[in-house]
Length: 525
Image 1: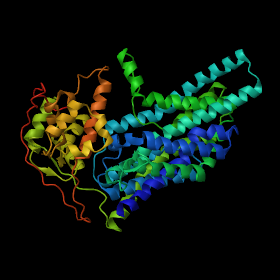
Image 2: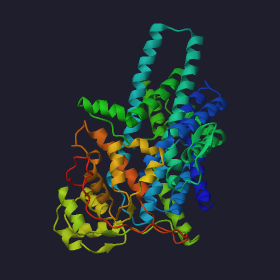
Image 3: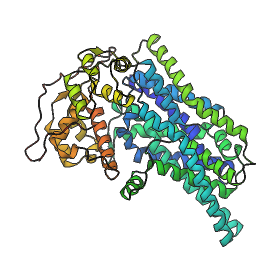
Image 4: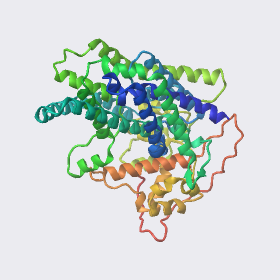
């Protein structure tokens, strides 16, 4: 029952997402009156649920986005803060990014739990918040020029042009809705997957997993948000910023989809990397920023006189305020939940630098005499360790993050059944599954030690040499390793629950299975 209660914040976040982000895929169609709101809401809702159920399984692989929040009451509060922030912005008719709200709420949790924020990942995400609308503006301007030239040459009948534009808006909106459900269900329900209360069941020979039921519930919450509260934001996007023609509305939707594709396609990254061209960073971007950027691109192409700069200023202010408000709200709500309702919003994590950590760091080129002065002393949180590292060593910020990652203590227990009973077993090669089974029953207090033993047990767990050609392979491998760390992590006992945890098993050196040709290797990073 407790898990179901905590699910309510995820459902609220889903409702807020539907109320705000649906404007990104159908806002221009409704704003230009080419598609009625009810039609847009119906198509949008159906395809959001389909996207969440059919393609939402990726959520299980991307739990790391909220993985730093290590207690269910904390996850509940973070989702609630993000949902309240998005709902507030929706009340102001401002299209904002739900991802921005979640990032801000997680940083609020980091401050409350004295956890260091990974500034490398944060910097990459913030950079895309600026690059995304600029790229969308450029794509929209080029598409609009091409569309005008095409129409000028072909001179289609006005009724035919109108009909094809309506069809195009519906098809593009349906595709965008499917992507919205598939990509954002991880933000709404991903953090609850480890505590999923729904079992698998079979109907008419079709097996539906508990995770799919969870995602369907999240998709339904998004759909309710579309029907009940998205109309005003749609009209802001469709006509509040710039009066759009039907063709321009279609161009905006296409430019929005292309921009998201550029930042999300691993296949495109592989193609660009294979021919030596620069690649786009594969990070979550805001569909709201892509749509607004595309509208501004067309407005500037027309001279910029028709852009309502007052509305643009309000939207920009909303973008800047969303992560800040979410972070402050998250911090305040965490204080209330822990001190008023007596629920633990974070589990303690201990950090210790010892000889094994220093030896592993040396293999990566991190060698500082100050590390020896800090070894064999436990730190209660990562901020304390970061403070000591800055005082005692000359390591830069990136190297300090590497030290903190290796000094983290935990409990990981290898249980192949946890992988085999899920659909995720198809994600791993035979060699990788063999290595997992080879380590069955072992326990680790360092995640990097688990990675080291996996790499020793099978060459298929080793990263390839860093190059553009190997970037996609290494990224896929990193996702698999992060997933295993999530699955094999033995959670700290909740003081409010009676739960038996497995006893740590004896550990020891690992040699490769007889049928592999593995040789001792350094731990993958």
